Length: 256
Image (cartoon, rainbow, N blue to C red):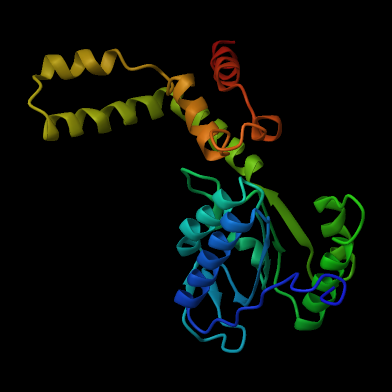
């Protein structure tokens, strides 16, 4: 691929977690200045906790959570088009870096779903990028083809929109359960006692006025900001959801 597309890739050998983070920051600056949309490929020892240098499995650990902000910055530079490939054992555990906002850390994560040997990882990764040369490549087909080259694991894909949708809906469902609502109100009651000078009567009045769910317009703002519809209106076609309708359906289902 280097012969067909000179400088199609930039390789950074990192021996510390700070070097990894700085490399991602440089990629974000490059994407912002050039308008190119890179694939971020991380090759390292991996596990459920994070990453360590490929040449030293006992080296400095880069926790998945420490990648969240750098990935968000890179994804913003790509207008939410970033694909992150983690070529490491249990690379799919990197989903832990994709669980927080306010911006989406990636459009999608790709990584092995189990521990695997180096030869399988090499074969699968080579096939993954070979298929990217296809005309109009589709990520699902690419990952399936790469998985067939490996014997001990599969390349899994997690679109961030799917993860975020599941998280939002799960939170909405929890919020309208009576026990959860009582617990949430009690937490707010204690905070208001500690942090305000409101009387007990005023606190109860304010608590009684709270909606069952976060207002749908606020949900919509959070979602649209997460998927950068404010930066790239075309993202509405890819990620747009009507949270007023979704929240209404969840409430209606609880009343049945």
